[in-house]
Length: 194
Ligand code: SAH
Image 1 (spheres, rainbow, N blue to C red):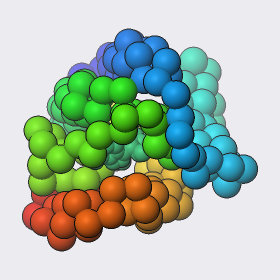
Image 2: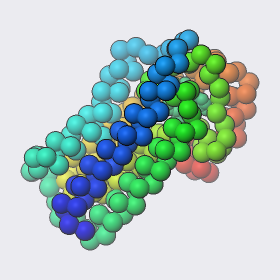
Image 3: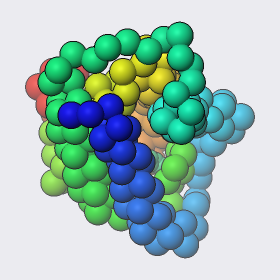
Image 4: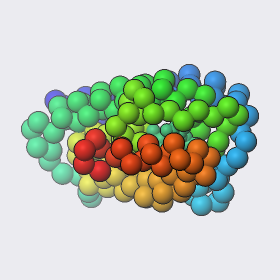
């Protein structure tokens, strides 16, 4: 796969993600928020993640900067990246569809919030974060640049590890025992492993 096609595939991942999100965000944002764990810390985490998964790699795709950290990719790297990107988009679609109006970009509890525990939520509590991890890996494989490729894993990693325990605490405070029971039989992002 040529470097140009790999860059094109990354841009398609970003556009595909945006289109899926736009469709579902319009619906959920019309549902009032009852409680929220938002704040400056959440805003900072979101900005870091957006920079790592979007701003840095898209700037690299447009300009080739930073040049110093470019390397020669390994032959199947681009193809593997394409597979990760496709699975990531599929997971985004499935998780948005399953969460419906319960989705928020940050940590919110909406009116008539329903605890989703089926479909892609059956074995894993954070499959949308799994989709972002897949994105971050796709980015590292598609962009042969140490900085622009790995900024997604670092940026999203900071959001994930800074947020996930707080999100689970919010879910426990909201749903109590059913969420505790759900936690006891599920993993965070990878079925059977993590
Ligand atoms: N962490 C989940 C959801 C990300 S969207 C995932 O990765 O798939 C973040 C919002 O989803 C938060 O506002 C939280 O209130 C809500 N949420 C998280 N888990 C949920 C669940 N199992 N059912 C319903 N809403 C959930």
